[in-house]
Image (cartoon, rainbow, N blue to C red):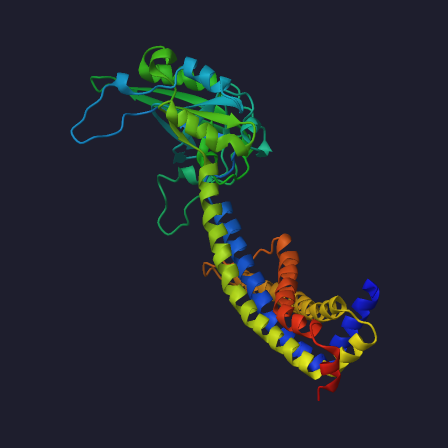
Length: 428
């Protein structure tokens, strides 16, 4: 029997019993739709949780801080016990396999007040030992990402750093519309051991505003690295010897996110504190992978019930078509031919149910997303209600439903294939 003849015969047989096939396939439709919807909801929750992680902008970096001795009750340690990030240590980081770049991050080590247009504010001043912030994946919404001497690049949330010190009663709080191209007065303040105050006022031109990155950069004000170092030395009253004091923080950037966790482990073994967002992402992915398996298992229970329905339908079909089986064998059909026909019919029911289940699952996901958008628009906290259908899921669901149908029809099909022609022809 040719394959095309087999397919044609299977389609004809299924068409003769449309009602029974449809009712049987509905069970597969419900099970497949449950699998698609639940797994898609799990994938959507995973995507939402990952995208909402704070500071998740650069998965190929390891944030490294000085290492401190593990705390024990009653213990005390000196500065010599701190594992410092010195220039020689940075060279060790650069020599590690998989490291692309090591970026030094420094912060202002003293007080500073901001003022602009009778508004006052504060700032998270920091600087990187690179010329362009684009190297750290930061982009500008206005201006540039390069800060020269006397210039600043501000994060996207800079407006929230300013407030009106003298608000008028009954008026809305003043907000700064735009600081791009403007000049900010920065007052640096320090105190000596006797409590004497010293101030210096410097004007900084805002040459760039960064795009929102949902990270520390949104609230930061970036200065030129050499200029920040000079101000830190002014606060300290001496030149800073990084060979003795070390750096506060460095970012070890890997060639790819795949090696980041391994790099973080090696740096931790060296005695430093190392953190990478990739660890959080991997933890979340593992959790949601288990969740998707559980969700898929719940949907598979419905498919198991549908499998029993397919087995019952095929058993009834074989009983009704016993004489037909005897006739086919009498005119030359082999056991394999009979087996292929009935297995094909069972698989066909599973395939039809799988296709219908995918379509129903897609519609249910659309409803879930519509509800999520509606809740988000009404401010009811529906940001996490989202379903994402992975590309592999529809194909897998249809294939799985077809296999379920195939397995369900295996035992009835074997019974049909092994019938004795004479007995089958005498069957009433």
